[in-house]
Image (cartoon, rainbow, N blue to C red):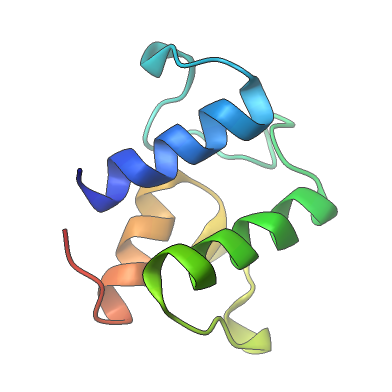
Length: 83
């Protein structure tokens, strides 16, 4: 399963309570669409650290890195995580 699909499935199951892939676009902003609040974002960070074996530094906890499936996938790519 690709990195993007793992991220999408996690968000769909835990925040949108569905497995309907069409409910979440790859560029949909989690914050603008009210999918995640600050607590949810921390949970996503814990998921990323656990699932992909990375450490998200405080200065990396910004929307540019974490506010959509594509942004998270790109961020993980910079961290050396590949499909």
